[in-house]
Length: 300
Image (cartoon, rainbow, N blue to C red):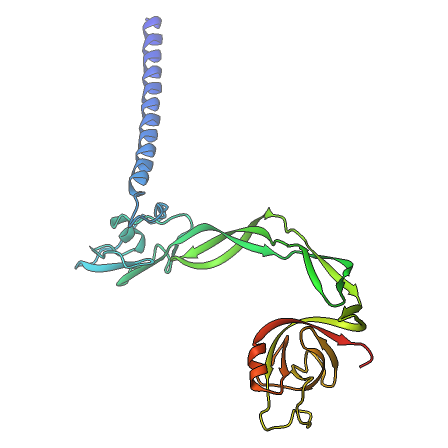
């Protein structure tokens, strides 16, 4: 008799364990089904990023007597939805719109929906831009070049630097930009130049000292019936210059022309330009336009 009682107790105990086991299994199944629903809701809308599931705290929803059309507005207007839902969260859920981790709602998700729901789509992209780096100039001296003459011995090359930025967008409009990486793509190559030191030049068997050498473009002009800018009548050896380059009254030697004095200016004589006076129009036309070496003489 005692054995039968013990057996009955054991059976009851085992049944209790089985019952508890099935309760636990059912709870796990319910939990899994809830998150399966969450996965199903997370589908793409208008090819946008997958949104995060709506806040689970919205368990209660109101009802209205008549359906109404709600517009859903993101970076562009999506199709509206006709619904009786009251909360923004449940309206979005019914429209299969799921917020991404960084997306924003203009109103709280558990608020009562009005005629439209505005969503700010937040995305990130990476962009690159290139920055050119200037090169240094290395100077050397040469007595084979005239003083003031510059010759490039080795041409410089700019370097290249690449910057990578992380750009945050809200509805496809840039909101913030952050530099996350800088990479040197190409080192700059220094330019090497030679500067002239020679201050004596020989022309026609005659040597003379000069203080500056200038490479210039020379044209010719003749009588105009007017005096020069300095108030004298023009004659051979009078030239027009840009006073910012050569001061008026400066004595010069111009290859192919000879000795000259800067005593005139001209509206078109700017920079490294010089206009040479000739007595006749024919001489001026024969000269034409040519590149010349101009020496600013010492003892001006």
